[in-house]
Length: 194
Image (cartoon, rainbow, N blue to C red; front, side):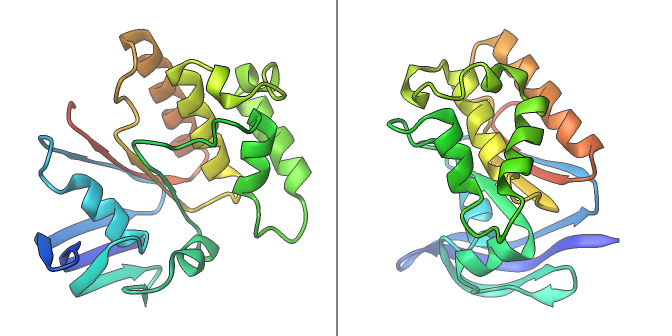
């Protein structure tokens, strides 16, 4: 079943149009990658879906409903999470505090979900009381992914998750991404390198 259907998306920043009639389809549990050079508009696609950039025209259909122009908080409640490329953790907060922020709209079960994520990302459990500023780039990326997963989204969007990481950490992080997809979460990712 189609989870996300972006139809003829036109978007940009202020008066600057960046995207022209972009179309993307993501099925439930699917892994979709958008690959392109720096400046091609990949991040703008993600930000537009997540309600962070100006939607000029086209439709963003999620689970059969048009979410074009919805506020980001409403998009999160529908089951979409986003990990930006830069500044994707709160450096002065601990790993645990970062995860707690990821569940800020949860009514209950947040602690149980955080424990599940510590089981999924065991290295984070051993560092749960460390400030994220003390972690490696790869570990910070894991924190960002785990925080995005606290709400158990149906769609996880990752903006260049390998940017700035050593090759061994890229491999490790993509193993986590594969585990996330295997658990049923659809992945929409943008990268410069395939």
